[in-house]
Amino acid sequence: MKIEESISVDPHVCHGQPCFKGTRIMVYLVLELLEGGVSVEKILKEYYPSLTQESVQAALHYAAELVKGEQVIPFQKVA
Image (cartoon, rainbow, N blue to C red; front, side, top):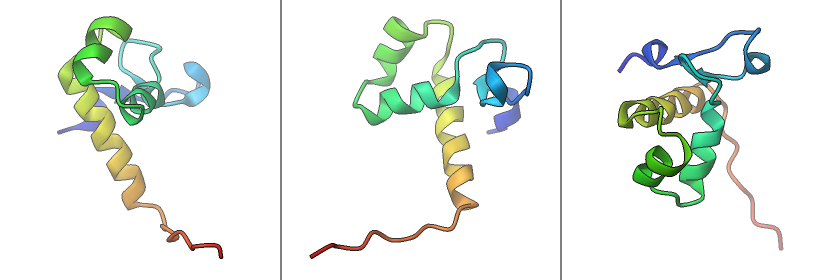
């Protein structure tokens, strides 16, 4: 999957936040809905009907690629 086909980052659109191409829908909004347990079907039907299943997959792929480049610090239990 080529992320650049579905997602763009333009400093003149939404303050440079990653958006779905041709929209002002920021990627993080869809990711937050998924995190909250909203189904892909509901996101596409009720929230963002201009997006596609492929758009949502691109958002997940984009997030995964960002995390790959991050140093992940494990959580520590606090007594």
